[in-house]
Amino acid sequence: MATNVKLKTESSRFLSTILVSALESCREGDFGLQEDLGLSLEAMQALDQLKADQIQSISENYVRDVPNLKWFPVDVSKLTRIIEIEAREAQRYVMIDEFLRRGACKEMMAELFGLRSTQVASRKRFLNVPTVKGRLPATTLDEQRKVYDAWLANITIADKRQRMLVVAKSTGIPLSQIYREVQIIEQVAATAHSNASRICA
Image (tube, rainbow, N blue to C red):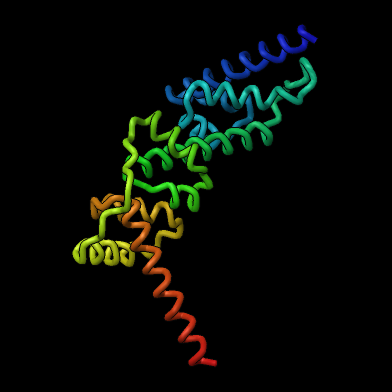
């Protein structure tokens, strides 16, 4: 049993080394190893977004349920899926960190990212982001107008989280206040749509 575990560990390290070597070669314009592995350029670009420990995690996930010495040839489909999942997760945490740094409250982190209060508190502590206690400051009329204008100006952004970040960057208003104003905007829009539907009926 110990031998199997050791072999899995060594296989994971070996695969991780191969992926890093292929990535470094691609950065230098040499795509030979990438082509030998059968990985697409898109997969290598996704891999390029990840840190060393994340690449190691990909290798560990890949060899975990493969019989010893049977993971060659590389199952490109499986490896690509794992890379894509890891890349999406990395992007998610980049967004989470930016939300917290821009003053997101725990309610919006729960709605938009499914994070519990303890997870938000832990991540804030890690990022050295202070927790603001008490009620949110009232949004001024000028701030309300800025949020409203910026929210409508970016209506083509389908991802609500991305849209909120764009509004925060353009207005400089904390995300917790933007979240509150957007809720009001959406409630007004929903009421207007409901009234219009009743009139049409």
